[in-house]
Image (cartoon, rainbow, N blue to C red; front, top):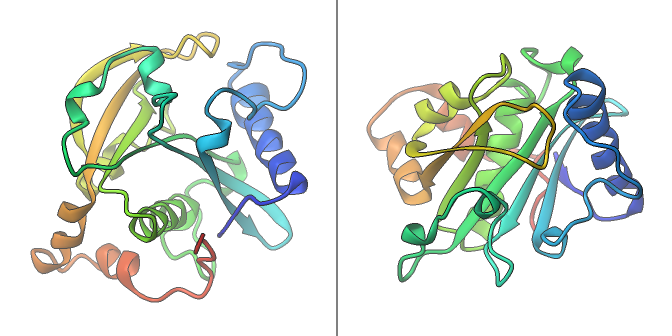
Length: 206
């Protein structure tokens, strides 16, 4: 797990977007130039997962800024901007089909678990207090259930992501990072130990 830092990494982000949202699901409208380039790109961090020599997963983290958050193209989230809070939106979570629902050495909860761990680690290192997740509701690959089990709560905000073609309904979930860190004191589930324990493959210290 690592952060995209150079042109080759960002080309891999575009490769994943084209492979999953484009070839597999047919959601991407035609576009010239890099897929990831938009008004939020300067406020974005891209988490990457590589298995062997192949990049297999990514998640985009967008910090709240004067540009707002991507979800605000469709629904308002001003009520979550309370004093002392620092919001981030995680979106565009993609894992290559052949690497979903598999576990690997160093990724005991699979690529999704690794991306969640990297996201939480990055948010803590950068002082983020709340994470908004923008998720599809109707796809067989949606991670709504595991994220709700982790502590994300439904906001009731449903919308259509009109940036994509025929992607169906999406929903916004919200996680209080402090609540997440209190969970290990109230449950013995090993996933929380995995989230908090030292991990030499998490290279997201920026």
